Amino acid sequence: MSPSDLPPLDCHAHIAPDVTSTQVKALNGAIIFAMTRSPAEANFAVPRSDPTILWGYGAHPGVPKAVAAVTEQSIQHAVEQHVIMGEIGLDRKTALAPQLATLELIFDTCAGQPLLLSLHSTGRTSELLDALTRRPQTGAILHWFNGTREEIERAAGLGCYFSVNAAMTDDRLTWIPRDRLLPETDFPSSRRATRAKTPGDISFLEERMSALLQQPILSIRELWYHNLATLANSTGTVSRMPLNLQRILKRP
View (cartoon, rainbow, N blue to C red):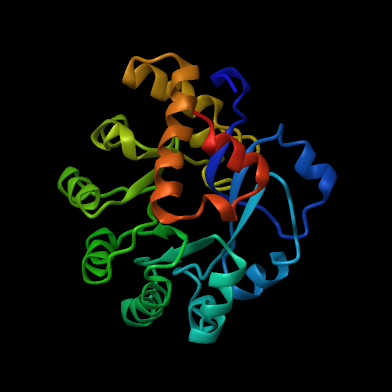
C-alpha cells in the first residue's frame, strides 16, 4: 500500500454509538478511534463491528456521573471488549479527588494489558503526568495536550504519544517529537478551529503539519501510520484492531 492509498486517520473523535452504516460509509473510509463519554455509552457500542471504527471505553473527567459509574468490574470487562480506554483523564472543571481515584483504578486494572489509553488533561496537565509517573502506561496517548514545553518533554520521557489537532498552536505542534505524533479531530469540538467537517477530516491538520515539518502531505500521513504501528506493536494491540487496519500496520 502506497502513502496515497492510506485512509485518513483520526485517533480521537466522538461519534454517536447508534451511527448507521450509511453514515459510517460517508466518512471516506477514515480509520477513527471513537471515544465514549461514559461506561453506559461504551456498553451501547460494544455490539458494533465497524470495519473502520475502534470504540473506546470512556469516563469523561468533566462528567461527574460518568466518573462515578466506573467500577473495577466494569473496567475488567472493558479490557476484554475494547482496545481503547477513552476518553478518560483529569479535568479542571470538577473536583480532582474523585477523578484521580477513578483514573488510578483504571490505570491499575489496565497495567500490562494490550490497550491504548486516550487521556484528557484540560487544566490538569501536571497532575496527569504525576499519575502516569506513579502508574506508567505503555499505551498512553495524550489527547489535545496543552502543557508547557517542559511538560511535553516530561511526557515524552514517560513514553507518551500525543494526538494533535489543528486547534493547537504551532509551538506545541513542533515541540512534540515527530515520532510521537498522531492525528485527531476531537470532532465535534472546536470545529471552527480544527476545520474538521466530520470525524476523520484531518485535511487541514495535514496541511499545517506539512508546512511546519516541511514534508509533503503524503509523508505526513505515512508518519501518522508509522507512529501508530510502532505504538500498536509495543503495546501488543495490533491483533485487536480491525483487519483492514491490521493490514496497514503490518505492511513493510
